[in-house]
Each structure stands twice: as structure tokens, then as C-alpha cells.
Amino acid sequence: MSGPERVLIRARAVIPMDRKGRVIRDGAVLIEDGAISSVGTRDAVRDPHAKDDLVIDEPYGLVIPGLVDLHVHLAQALIRGVVPDDVTLLSWLRDWVWRLQGVYDAEDGRASAELCVLEMLKTGTTCFLEAGLHRRYGLDGVAEAVTRSGIRAFLSKKVMDLRGYATVENALPEGMIEDGEQCLRDFLEMRRRWAGAGDGRIDVWIGLRTPGAVSDEMFARAAQLADELGAGVTMHLAEVEEDLRYFASRGHTPSSFLRGFGLLGRKRVYAHCVWLGDRDIEAFASTGTSVAHCPSSNLKLGSGVAPVVAMRRKGVTVGLGCDGGPSNDAYDMVREMKTAALLQKVFHGPSSLTCWDVLEMATVMGARALGIEERIGSLEVGKRADVVVLRLAHPSVRPFTDPASLAVYSATGRDVVHVLVDGRPVVLDGRVLTMDEERVLRNAEERLEAVLRKFGPDRPAAPRNP
Image 1 (cartoon, helix red, strand yellow):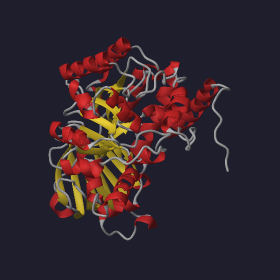
Image 2 (tube, one colour; image 1 turned 60 degrees about the horizontal axis):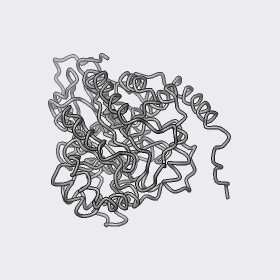
Image 3 (spheres, helix red, strand yellow; image 1 turned 30 degrees about the horizontal axis):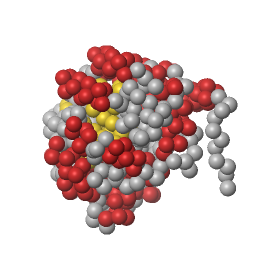
Image 4 (cartoon, one colour; image 1 turned 90 degrees about the horizontal axis):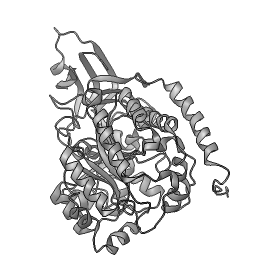
């Protein structure tokens, strides 16, 4: 995937995220050979003797680093709007999401991945961590689609060998069960084929399924394998109180359980963490273990409110995640920033999480959690040019006042107009250059119909409208 060697972006403001509170008015970013070569005012950045291959000039533009989504279910974009919004998390999973995904084939998996990536790119996400892919989704097809899109991705292969969920036995339907040995083989093959693909934009991690679906032996083997290969690990953790009962039945807290298998440390990203206690937070902070905070998902499913303020005060790296189509109903990190900020203010006061804090979570902290903070996460000379430009021209984001506040509280992903990954334009004027948008949308509609047909007549009845 080639792109212009030299790109100049000029805008009303630049937020480089090299330090909190810094805004460059009438700013510019110069990109050369995929890396950032200069950031500053228009006059300071412009070289009158140089020829730029591409110039992006936005009078109402705000330039920010590419957004990092730390918890994504590629396979769930296809079933957005299908699942009722008044069921418990266990019913949501067991009766709906898992059963729907359990009839997927490789065409369905690829269609969902393409739809998800299309939305992420159009709303400013330049890098994401997949929660865990089932082999029935078609691992190579999904990886190829993601790679071709131009996005930066940390794909993970789901690893499991049991069928429970927390303390609930036999929770997983037949279509979602995988053999543990096959999971490990698939991970190794996927890593061999795809880690480093896309000029280094793609990596492959281990995605452990939830506690109750992974045996002690598999936890230990996965940790050892990740350490040997330098691979990351991600897993849902302490999303619901039932998780705490599972760990307590083993004589543990979440963190002490993970510590026993060597699963705390850098490049260990745990999603949700709603029910972590003080000792867990201390353990995460001291080991460099990271959290993917998913506020919209936790709110919709009634899971609880993660102790984000306490985590951040202790020094835990906390990023943001949109989660999935049926739990969030959007893969829009701009919207997720606002939800994250407002949720903590309700419980901890107006200064508990500021617009600058959530901008940091969506950029710098996301990159740190993935172990690539030296490469992306801020607009600094030498870093790879993952860049997003929002056009703050709509009445809902005017007048052009505090750019950070506007980005978090007023804008949405639909204000994104240009996106670059590794210095290559993947979105220009709101149009994704690397994907056929009409084909992706049409295919998603067709594949959802196929999934619903396979789901069958025993589909649980949706709640009646009042």
C-alpha cells in the first residue's frame, strides 16, 4: 500500500498530545515517508522550497493523533440492532450474541469485519485491538480484509478449552465451542502468516476467553507461549459481579489469579474491569498491566461503572474501547470519549475526568497499553503519522472555541474528514479510499439476512414494544 511521500496538513488548531493542554492555533503537521517530520504553526512548518505531494488545508480543521480502540469485536458489527436492550448480560450472551455468532461462516465473519473497519476508519480510529477471533469467522479472510483496509490492527485469536462463563457451566452454545489445542495451533499459524503484515501495521495476540471457559492448564500454556513469542494477551475481566464469585471460589481476586499464571505486566490488556478492588488496582499499577474501559457497553448492559478515577490515580494505564455492535451500537471513539468523561463526573465530581484526560486515554494511553507508545499515540517528530482531522464546521461544534472541549463534548465521529495511517491517506473528505463502501454496506445487509436464516425459527422472541 503506497502513499504520498510528503503530506502537509494545515488547520485551525492542532492538539499533538505531546503534553496535556498544548494547543497549536493555526497549526500544521508535515509528514515525510510515513513519519511526522514537523509540528508547529503554519509559518514554522512550511518550507517554501519544498514540494508537497498532498496538501490538506482545513480552515475549520482540528488535527489530533489517530484514536486507539482497545476493545473491538469485529464479528459483532453485523448484528447491531438485533439483540434486545432489556436482557441481562448472561442472557444477552447465551441466548443472543453467542447463538448468532455460532452460525457464522467465513463470509459472515469477513463481512462483519469489513463493516466494522469501515466505520472505525470513517470515525477516526486508526488502531484497534480485537478481543478474540473464533476460527469459524475465517481467520485469514478477516486478517486479509483488515490488512487491505490500511488500518493498524492487533488481531487476537480466541483461546479456550471449556464452555463455561464465570460460575455458569455449559454457557457456550455448540457453535462457539473450540478445541484448546486447535486454538493454540490457529494462533501460531495466524501469527506466522499475519504478524508484521501491512508494512508492520498488523500484530497477532492471544485473546483468552472469559474466566470459566479457560482451564488452569490453558491459562498457563497461553501465558508461556505469549512470553516466548513476545505476544500480547487480552481478555474480558471482572465485567460482572459473577466474575468475582468465580475468582473467590478459587480463593483469589482477579489480580491474584492472573498473577499466578504470569498474566500481569506490559502488553496485557484486560477489558471492562468494572469490579476490580483496591488490591487489584494496586497490582495492575505495579506491574504495568493495562485496562480497556468500555463505558457505553457497561452502561447499556447494566454491568456497572469501572473505577477509572481510582485506577488513573494509582498509575494504571487505562485506554478506551467501543466493544461491539450489540453492546455499544457504534464503533465511534469520538462519542466514546464523551461517554467516558460524563460517566465519571456523575460519581466523582466535575474535575474527576476532564476532556484532556479522555483525549489522553484515547490516544497516548491506548498506544502505551499496546506497547507501541514510541511509534504512535501523539504527534511528535519521528513517530509514525497516524493522524485524524476533524472539520468543526457544523453548527453543533461552533463557534470554534476550546478545541479539546469541542472534540470531546461536541463532536462525533461524523465530523472526521481525513484520516492517515503510517502517513498514507485512508480517508479523504469523508470517503474511505481503501474500501468499496457501497459493496461493504450491501454485503453486510445480505450476510445478516443469511445469518438470521441460519439462526432458525427457534430464535428467542424479542420484547414487545410498550
